[in-house]
Image (cartoon, rainbow, N blue to C red):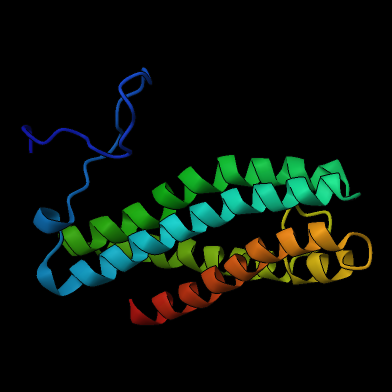
Amino acid sequence: MADKQNNFPPLPRFIPLKPCFYQDFETDIPDQHRTTTKRLYYLWMLNSITLAVNLIGCLAWMIGGGGAVNFGLAFLWLILFTPCSYVCWFRPIYKAFKTDSSFNFMAFFFTFMAQLVISIIQAVGIPGWGVCGWIATISFFGTNVGSAVVMLIPTIMFTAVSVFSFVALTKV
């Protein structure tokens, strides 16, 4: 283990930070769990990309006449939920499959259930919560159609994250 250098997240050389974690699916995860672990990693990436697209959707919402609070909260959610979801639910499931650790499985299930609830709330889209969900998007079609169409993209992505999260929870 001493010869393994941290390799995640992969950062460009000009950034003065170093990777924080070592991650190698091929050597760390047993064959029978590798596909599930990779799919959960892809789900984490989809969730992170969705939060970034939500920031763009909330920017369109703000430009189209919505409040700046949604844009500010969308930025906060992106900065907060991307690393927290990695550390709080992806790393525990990665370590659980790597070492067959019941504590890590418990940590994963606890935090991933919270993530699932948050994903559903994001898909619903309560106005003023910093997410472009169904309620916020449909209600904004009457104000600015162009902005609402842009808001529809993260709304669909939040719905997909919710569905995929539920499916992933049933598979683990």
